[in-house]
Length: 467
Image 1: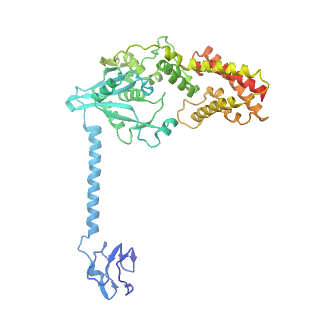
Image 2: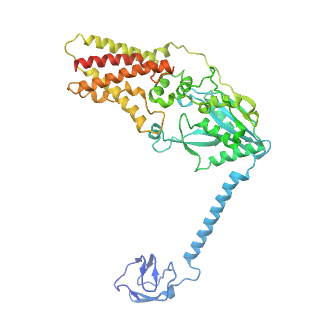
Image 3: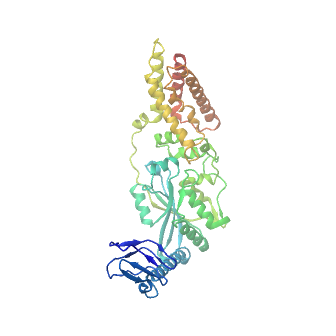
């Protein structure tokens, strides 16, 4: 028997009162009233006394099944139905929708655009089957600006890209709005290969599969489609063993990148400044398909089961040709011009200061402070990101991180050691640039930086004598 104090006059909540033979969960019992609350669980025969009234637990027992039992059963049924629905929906999405014999699969290629993100073009796979009502363009080049920490993840190389699906008119509308040409290559696939490819893409579009870690050279919108075609066709898909480069020689990832950045000199300068030696490795034939146009050209040369891989080539939209603007202003604002002028000014200023017996270091604090800060950014791109291609960056020899602490020791004896180390690093940068141009033909150090590095060496040599 459980006895509560007689003087209680308020509503009490009993949360898990346990006796020898019963338990009550979260019930509210009114004292001095005839109202009786239905217990959550039917309990065994016992008695409890509230104030002057006596209640028998048996008298509070609800009819069987209890409210809780009914709720549990209903919840279980709802969950079972929901699970069955999800399983049936997934199974239908992946396997039930078979392509008709009239279905076609095409590689869609969109030409490079004016914006930096569109400088290299774009690929997508289009599955069209009017009999089944299918019109789907599979696009692996999608990312969400609403992603938490978007810019940080973008800088670190951890921004998740994902597969998106849209109708063809949406792709055409976007390309025309940006004045970018669109071509279609109808692929020579068997019915079984079409179905395999469609199932592969649908499986990739599942929420748990659609995101992937984007890598500029190795895993992007073009390489994902290349791998999808391999998965569907197996060994029957044979790409040419020869590079599509006109000279017939393998080129580096950097070389291919620079080819598409020719009309964007500042983007070309910045990207060459940020990437390291991994980008100077020769791209194999399969690897040069990281560029959408290269994938398109390789499919023209490829075979499937001994037959041409492309049945038909169509031009869906041709961009409008705009009048060519004068290149005079572009040349004046190019990195080569700006850094050359800056280098010449530094040389003249250094020569002027050499004639003075005493100089201030205000210019050097600003100049080397900015370069040193840029050096730390490049270093972080190497050691604190997942880009991969930003490792082993030789530009750190002249965009030297030690330039930043140097500015605090220009009037200190230890400052001369910082200057000497920085001077040696800058000289090594020049040597590396010359050898790289001679042996590789495509230097890792941006061409616009040459005169600037020479002026940097002259300034460091001046400081070595004055510090």
